[in-house]
Length: 132
Image (tube, rainbow, N blue to C red; front, side):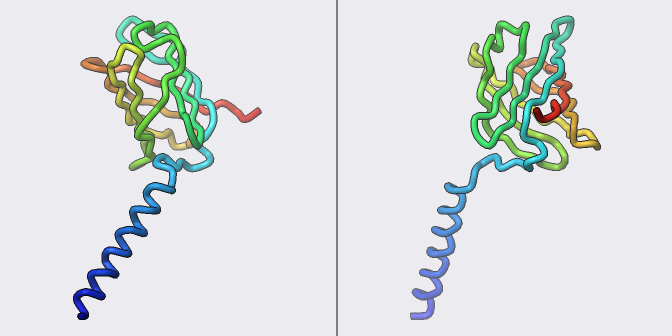
């Protein structure tokens, strides 16, 4: 009888954990990271403006002058802050995934690092724009 009771407690704990994993946002970021990050992207001799918009929902990345990635903002997935770096994924309009893990600068106002875009590396260098 004890094993049945212990088993039901395990099942109940599992269901509660599962319920919380569904209700808690997958990319709950620190409020200080939310906002519009602007700067540049570089890929070889090509470059353009990078606009990274971090929100509680529907965060996006826009890279101007990059027709292959797309001409409008692309939704981010898998957003998380781990080991002092912001990680995310965005699939360009051409279907090629961009996978980034950008180190957060010591002042928490800049992100600079390389993202893998298909078979190439793209440098992203953005800073948090002041709140309006």
